Image (tube, rainbow, N blue to C red):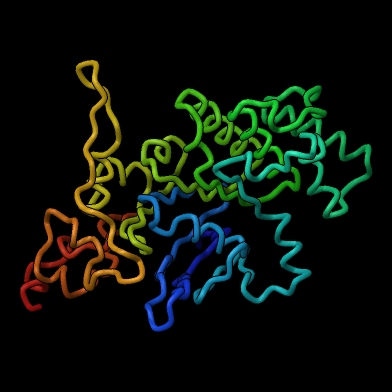
Length: 326
């Protein structure tokens, strides 16, 4: 019997109320389900506005879901008392896209990293300083820089500080929300390698959110592709990149920049993303899909197994006779 997942998300939804009375709400996340095994990196990828960040924040209870369940170590996170939720914060942390917006500019780096230990009353002053030195070593920073302030560091160094802060409480799960998208390509590689090394050394589990499939490929074990609030495909990294089955995933693959003849080549995705307050009927991707059929405009496709650990939601994967009856 396989071990229970560290994180299990089922039918998660977030509907933001409309600003105008009578207008439909924004369906930011609409029925998302996935599991993350202990020690695994689960990539969540899609265009901006597809609901990735909202999903990540709901997983940590930084944002309250409209409906659905979130279980962490088989505990129902939606049923936690305030004291239990505070304890959960020690087990799950987040690394944001922009460290400058998440690091208090008035606090030294040493104070910032030790702050979670102070808030949770962990260790003596001496033990906290010892932990600080260890964290600096883990993320590749000099302990002598503990008295400096965030603005004195480069973007890559600030992200290392943010990672050290997230590690301070020795969490089991870290949500990386576009954690490298604001960095130069060479610095991205350094931070991705650091995250991979930390996962292996500390036994961490990641929910890795990104709009860039190339970045997700570098670190993830499994990948889910989101479009307009829904997961449309999920597979192991190898299966997804070798045999993408959903047309949206295939288009995303072609949009990954590549170098040929000394030039940078990539394809753009045709059309605009529909409004999440009024998603199209049927398959939500049909307005931009080059393979759209009549059934796609009327019936929402269900997740279909296309491999041992590979699923996709597309009418092209069902029997033609089923489509013809619609």
